[in-house]
Image (cartoon, rainbow over all chains, first blue to last red; front, side, top):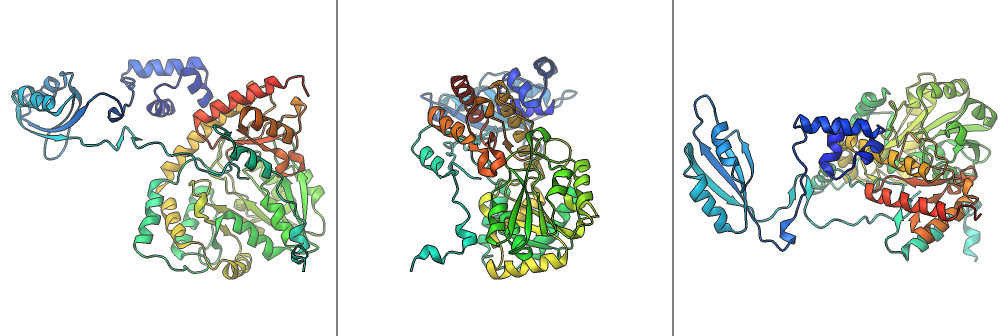
Amino acid sequence: MDEILEILEKNGRASEEEIALMLNKSVEEVRGAIKRLETDNVIVGYNTLINWEKSDRENVIALIEVKVTPQRGQGFDKVAERIYRYPQVKACYLMSGGFDLTVIIEGREMKEVALFVAEKLAPLEGVLSTATHFVLKKYKDEGVVFADKELDDREALIL
Amino acid sequence: MNLSDMIRPSVSNVPPSGIRKYFDLINEMKDAISLGIGEPDFVTPWSIREAGIYSLEKGHTHYSSNPGFIELRRQIAKYLIRKYNVSYDPAKEIVVTVGASEGIDIALRALVGPGDEVIIPEPSFVAYKGCTSFTGATPVSIELKAEDEFKLKPEQLEKALTKRTKVVILPFPNNPTGAIMTGEEQKKIVDVLKDRDVIIISDEIYAELTYSGKHVSFASFPEIREKTILINGFSKAFAMTGWRIGYACGHPVLIEAMNKIHQYAIMCSPTTAQYAASEALNNCDDEVDSMVREYNRRRRVMVDGFRKAGLDCFEPLGAFYVFPGISSTGMTSDEFCEGLLKEEKVLAVPGSAFGSCGEGFIRTTYANSYENIVEAMKRIRQFVENHKGKN
């Protein structure tokens, strides 16, 4: 089970057949296991990691530190929900330390992100303060280095 | 003066490598896939590289003591107990070498000379025979067989032993076959050797890369512990080939002799590599485990690929090699490899490069990316298909 996750975490496109072969299991076994992982929400989704900088699309990402007042009986969850429901919010984490929520926003330009913070996020009931940090460059994301792939420069033949 | 006459016969008589032509061929090719590289495709884990860099920043650029930093030797001793339950005194029973290769060389130089015989199970890593020949001693091959899964049988060993046998080399997990030996199988070999006056050189450089059960070290058998030199290193397990660092362990009398040669020939192993190796032993278990799991997955894909191509392929359970039989194609291993490279741009190594009994087999390594392996297996299948009934 763990190894299926290890494979899929690195390559969401690995087929059931490939995984079965790699792990010396039957295709049915692997299919069943993946199905269970999906049902149990262990596998939450399958994404593609895109380096937008190299595409034609303009894209800005901001990491926003949000301080909130927890609500009676519901802690941070209710406020968090009101934030993460927005489609602009790519990620939302509850944090330990100096602030409460990390909110990652993606937009086409800085102004769009800034406006979202000013008009939607900051005025929300329970939100005490926000601090917006724009991402200038992604070096690595989801365990993958974004720099151009290094060539295999090993000698062609070694006994 | 004819310079060639100045070279000792024991050196000039060792034939040049027959695989030169493959270098020339592949160097002219684009998009060729090499399955001929006997080293990890992983880069050394970052924390190890970082430790090497840090040691340079701190100015640790001097010699170490001849057998290596005592701290590193202590860590090696701990690691060997933890992993293989073999115990060595770091002060007297361990020498840090320039790769496992140096360990093999200085062990042979310390032990054998003209008139002595060295038993080498083959197919095997080419250096055993070469280094034996350089000393003037006689290499005696034992031909391991595919039907025995390339394991050494006690009867074979019994037959090869003579009054002149001084050293027996035990190369498991094996390059090029990927064969391993289980504890029970090893015990039978131990029983043959325990009452003989021979030294065992057990090359366990691939010990971490074992895919079925746990690797058992020959040095862990108390009956032969005193006469066994354990060779190991960092190259394969920690993906550190270019650092050139390994170690040899054994009885103080043997290690002292080896260290004498090491001291005059090498002085000490590279200091930077020693610091890096130290980090490898301290903090890299997870990285090693993850590389081993990855190799294991690729191994299954490759074995399956050969079987689907219709080639006989025993299941290799160690190292990172697959050693399928190709005689069903009617080609020699050299013809197969040359054809495969020219027609499908995949480089494999003819089994004959690892001893004459490797004829009829090819060595391929799965120390390559998953994508490359899948593509290479497709091309090999095509190649076998194209040559069906031709030869």
